[in-house]
Image (cartoon, rainbow, N blue to C red; front, side, top):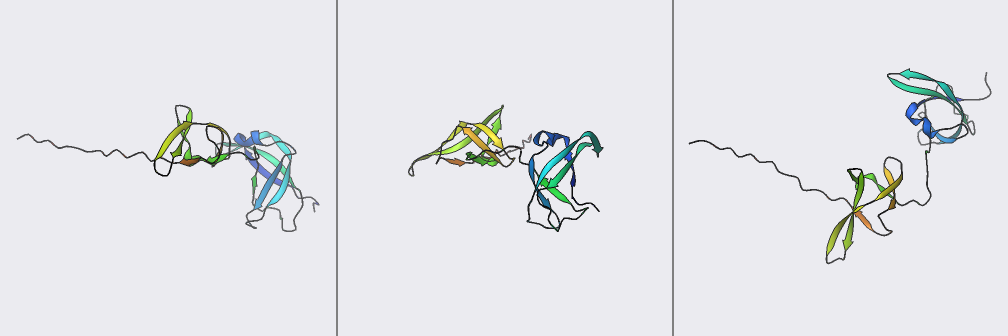
Length: 162
C-alpha cells in the first residue's frame, strides 16, 4: 500500500501555458460536491497522449493535506488560476462588443431628466471567460448598459401583373 496519494490528471495541451511545477491549484471531488481541496503540481509529462483527436499531457498533483475521504479512482476536477489581479475593475462579457478588433461598451450618461447613452472604446485586461477587466475607458461609478439594436423587419411585396 502506498502512503501518499497522487492525483493523476490529464491536461489539454492548450492549458499547459497556465501550469508549472510547484503551482497551487484547487481540486473538487465529484463524490463530495461543494468541497474544495488544495493541491500542488509535482510533475508534468514530456510525452503527449492523443485521445479523440485531442492532445493531453499527464500531470501529477499532490494534495496539500490528504483527506480521509480521498480514494484511488475517484473523479477529480482541478481548477488552476492562470492569472489574477487584485481590485481589478471588471464587467460581465455581455456588456462588451467587439468589432474590427475594437472593444466597446455603452455607458449611461446624463441626468434623471435627460438620459443619453455613449459608446466608448475600452482597453481590456485579465478575463476568466465570464468577466473581463476594463483597464481604460470606464470610470468608477459609471453605469454600463446593453443597447439592443432594433431588429430589421423583412417585408416582401407581391406584385401581380393585371
